[in-house]
Length: 472
Image (tube, rainbow, N blue to C red):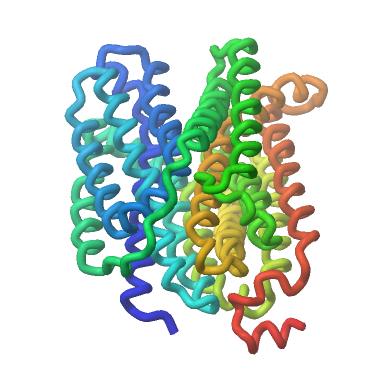
C-alpha cells in the first residue's frame, strides 16, 4: 500500500511534468499573434520553442549530479522557483530576444524539475509500488501535448498570448508550497565526485546539436547542408561523449547501467516509443485542419479523445501490469499504437466522426499503457545506489525521443507527398498524411521487435511475488 505522502509527492511531480510538457507545445498555436505583438515574422517564433527544448536536452544530464551535490529537495524547490519566475518573465517580455532568453531560463528550471522530482519518488518507492507511482507521474505528461492546441487556441482567440505563460504562476506557487511541506531533506551522504566537466561539454553539446538538427528537419526553409552539418556534429560529439563516459572513473552519467537488460530495453524501446507518441498530437490536428478543412475548435475536440484514452486506461495500468507482466503489455501498446497509426492513414472527410474519435481513443490508450510500462520496467532491476545515474539517462533518452517525434512526423509528411503521387484515387493532401502515418507505424514495429526480445519474466521484481508466480 502506497503511503499518502508518497502518493501525493508522485502527483506533485506529475503536475510539474504537465507544466513542462505543456510549455513545450502550447506556443506553436499562438505564433501569428506573438509575432505581430513582438514585431517579428510568425516563423521567428519557432526560436521560442526550440530554445526551450534545446535547454531541456542540454541540461537534463546535469540533474543527477546536482541532486547528489546539493540535495534533491533543494534542487527541486529551486527548479520550481526558476521555472515559475521565468514564466512570469516570458509573459512580460517586450521583444523576441528577451522572450527567447527567458525561455532558456524556463528550460533550465524544467530540466531540473521533473528528473529530480521523479528521482525523489523512485528512491522512496518499494519495488511493488513502482507501477502505481509511475502511472501517477506518466499520464499528465501525455495529456499536455494533446490539449495544448485547444488551450492555446482558446487563449489566443479570447485572451492575450501572454496568458499561456501566466497560467504557470499559480501552478508554480502551489507546486512550491506543496513541495515545501511534502518533501523532506534526505540524510547527509558522502559528497559526490568532482563534476565531470569533459562529460558535460561533450554530452550537452552533442544533445544540443541533435535537438537543433531535429529543429532544422521540422523547418521547411532549412537547407540540406545545414541539416547534414549539424547532424554530423551531433553524431561525432555524442560518439565522443560515449567513449569518454565509458572510460571515465567518475562519469557524468554512468552508462554501465545499460548492462541491466530491463533498463536497456526501457531506454531503447521507450525512446523509440516516445518518437511515435510525440508525432500523433502534431500530425492529427494538421490532418484535420489542412486536409479535411475542420475548424481549430472541432479539431481540438476530436484530438481530445486521445486524452480520454490516456485517462480511461490509467486506473487499469497497474492491475494489468501485475496480472500479465511487462512483455505482453508492451507488445499490446506497440501493436495498438501502430494499428491506430495505420487506421489514421485512412481518415477522410467521408469517414464518420465517431470512427475517427475511436481511432484517437485507441491511440491514447496505447500511449498511456506503453509509456507507463516503459517508465516502470526501467527501474525494476536497478539497485538503489545506481538510481541517480539510471534516472538521468532515462530522462535524457525520453526527452530526446519526444523532441524527435515532431521532426519524424515532419520528415514523414514531406515524404508522403512524392510517394502519394504514385497512388491514384485520393487527394494529394490526404494521401501525404496517409503515407506519413504508415511510415510512423514502422516506428511502432521497432518497439514491438524490442518487446519480443524481453524475457517473459522481465520486470517481475516490481509485480509482487503472487503475481509473478502466477505468470510463471
